[in-house]
Length: 433
Ligand code: C2O
Ligand code: CU
Ligand code: CU
Image (cartoon, rainbow, N blue to C red):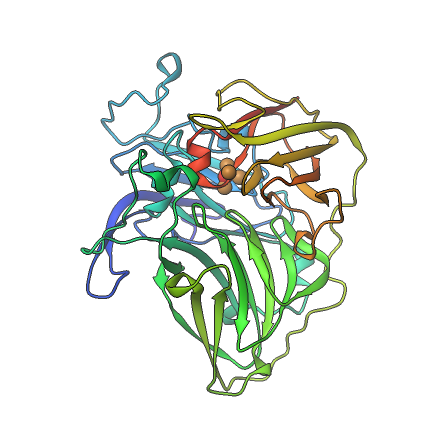
């Protein structure tokens, strides 16, 4: 997206018809009428304002996922932007008047990272993101500029999500009483940047792939076929100190992996497939790369990438138990209650947060980035490296993270990023004091 003036973007949320399944059209609800929405380029040290206007039939709230953002621009679920003339009664606390257009202000004091933005409306995040309300926001900084990483055409942000379609091409989303809804909604078609099973022509050089799982509920185990490796250079919240090589990457909803793949390892003209080893059939194929001859490669992945913030000492330990009740998904036994904080960490401190679960719950914390300290009492896995904002907590697992509360005081939230679980109340406030 192009700024309208330095540091100022404007985007209108509106319905649009696009061709996703060949020969049919799909109505999407998009930022700027596109799915994904425009990619916002942010720079550390350059504050940005994104003006969001709502021309959809429903209220919205926009959250910058991974953003270190003041609370009034964090996309709290009842901080709504409504369409003109909207008369619904969406949690209009004490007659709060909701605007039709809102300036989201981002100070952008954080490190270079792959962020994304998406809708966060109370009770309706899952169906509204499913309809298309999501996009990338990339933060760059001088530390990253100084590295010889692949860039320009050799840097590909890849938003991976699944959708189901009706025969007429429309997005198909189950009703809330459907048994498929409770555990989280999955589709049988995998989209990358809004396209099913796309092909990207790549030169036989290193490419930087910014992988984002923007699915409501599906996890992926990504591999390269006929073989190959991912060199991870960054996680959710920025560059790693040093690269980590993986044969496969399991990515849960909300997570990002910033990786480099060296396509010079494959013959010219060959196809390299990004597969999902967690599914068979159509959901097992993500996208293809076709390797072409290219200009010489002057990129490299240095063995020292960055100096992430060092590990702070925790001042407290808190537990958050993610569990299903009869009617909802709960944290510490309670369904979400707006305005009732489950924790009050102090600004400038760090705490150990212990997440336990009865199911797969990708746990996401707003504002505070964290390090994974332990998984099931053991060392974290190789894909847990670096500062993160979302961690995949597996069934009956206990995950300890060290979260730092930097940035701002005020009301934030943590929740399951399985968006159906989120809408079914697996969410909690915390106040930074
Ligand atoms: Cu990406 Cu509160 O979510
Ligand atoms: Cu978030
Ligand atoms: Cu969950």
